[in-house]
Length: 240
Length: 258
Image (tube, rainbow over all chains, first blue to last red; front, side, top):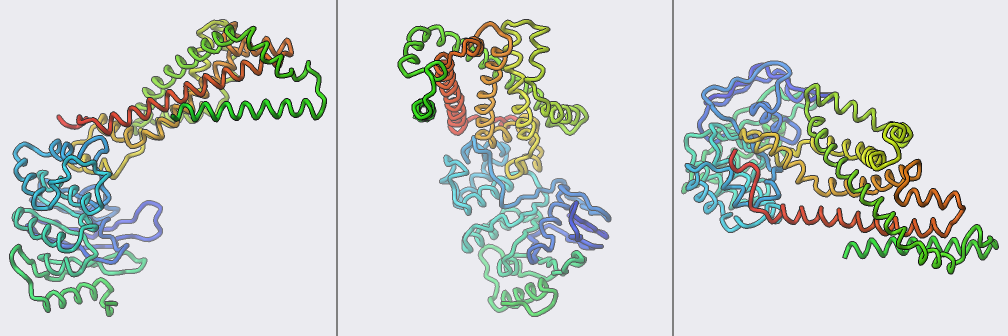
């Protein structure tokens, strides 16, 4: 699976400044990749462009060997007329039922199947939303801060489990947590702060690709975190 | 409980207005001919009460029928108006332009063509509450609920029925409020129609009382209109709450077999 952006330009209608200006960037899956950047650098916009929700103003995005691209974000809700369990069962194909059961157990949300989505905590909502995407057919899942409200130990477990369960899939994980992306990603793609000119470069930093049952050395994690933050700040000294 | 609250609110406002009226009568020394004393109002109520109750129920029945017609029509046209195709654009443009015109102004034409019977009252009641309903329905049906719809759209499950179910469910409170508001307008429309030219209903009785300069009769009629209107609006609100409770309790979902 390969995604390649060629001379990508994007400006939101009625916006004064472009989000992307002549951007060239690519990733090659499968694996767990991250998009990192300060707020407003265009992470979610890039995700929406890749998933086809937005169309580039100029340039193009080539996606090869990827049948289905899904884009999940953390403000999603399930319909209020269903319980969580009814909804999850209704959007899961029969062949994925056992996968759903495992995910619900692994993610610690099996107990909430009779609950209404509106009655859950933000962290529980995040996990349920991610679970329903994982039981869909997909080749690339863009996960835009989907675990933003989940506590750190649970989040780490979820990512490790996800990498074990789906070794042949590609994940593009959008996060503001440098430690997390440094530890778990194969590559971290950092969108640098480019003021009003629009982002035109994405730096690639090798991540530690930590798998389930392993532990990346702490000094390497710190080194990567520093590199990520430095890159995000446009190669100036990051404020730690 | 809410019905009682609404009734209490109406009775309080009505009693305050009567108090002010009689207060003004005492202070400024208005004649009994202009502002009847409480005893006269009670006498008129006992003499004409039953007749007025029948008339107000007649008006209410026409208003409810007109309201139902308007809701059905606004839903059907709203479904077309939400589309991004030319019929949708045309419907939206027509609705926005036509709603600016005061429908009551065309009431005389309706009476000319349809006479002073039921059809005219029904049509005027329906027309008066139709456009506010239509504009609200178009707005609700056309506006995506992105946080809920996104998953269904990106996984290819979305269809027009599911889209409508989501938008209706998410806006149920707004829809109930609009329907309650338009219920008042339907009642107003019916009374105006009766006041203008019809030969039935409480509006017709008010018109006759006006010609006789009989404020006591008008006060009784207003009391009954307020009472019926409060009960009808409470009934609609109760239905709205019941539907919401049913939907929150249901185990069926409209996208199960997609």
